[in-house]
Amino acid sequence: MDYLAQFQDRFIGIMQWEDCHALFEKLSNNPNDWYLYNTSKVVPKTVVNANDFLNAINNIKKVIKSEHQERYCGIVYTNDLNNPDFVKIFHPNNLGKSCGSSENPPIPQWLLSKIKPIDIIKRFDLPSEKKGFISKYFKL
Image 1 (spheres, rainbow, N blue to C red):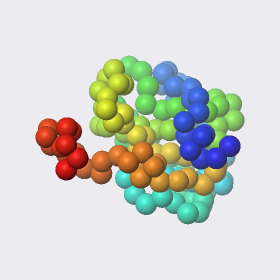
Image 2: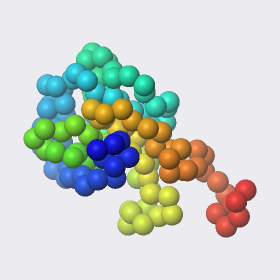
Image 3: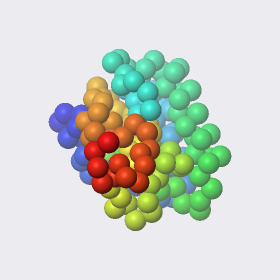
Image 4: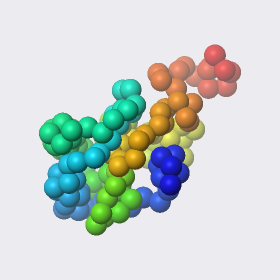
């Protein structure tokens, strides 16, 4: 399965904090051969080394802990709870509309995968910066 198909495939939402911690532990116990794609940056061309992957996981956990003060997780998704090889993590400050039916649904901040990513922002032609009210109706 190619990256885009896997990105759009079925994912399991991690709702309980203990399940989120368990997933991060599984990722930390298997730090090799991961592409770490921060969607606000350039698409990675190579896998990240194990130490950088572990540091990134720790930084992501800090962001989630400090900026997502909810009783439930709900911002981490994986394709497989037991053997994850694709994980989507949304930034707590970029969740879009709560109903999830906005014109441009939010893109995960971090995409962790075992296959080489493509530029998701470019692929979905998402705006790189917020546009004004008028530009919603006219292509400005």
